[in-house]
Image 1 (cartoon, rainbow, N blue to C red):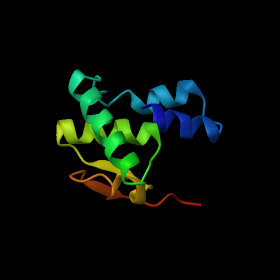
Image 2 (image 1 turned 135 degrees about the vertical axis):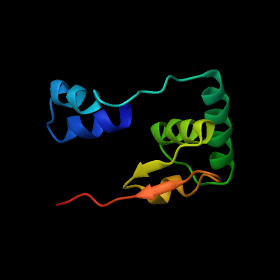
Image 3 (image 1 turned 90 degrees about the horizontal axis):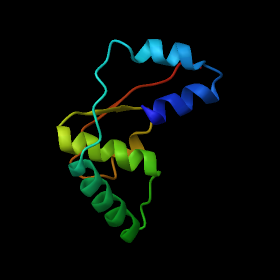
Length: 93
């Protein structure tokens, strides 16, 4: 949610519009399992020289913990995390 909202703010979208967009969706809570998984992912990627952004680490951890895929335009980052199912899409110009 953070990563999406940040990108929307960069494009001038208001909080009201972002909240309306999210309203039909269930927002998953951050669990202790996410914390441990995120820490492991971040450490492993750092040790292998394949660092990704901290928001992407949290998204990957949530995906692994829940078994849900990641829908993203940033296939390269999420493909670095073993086990993450990635669904790519293109953004219209």
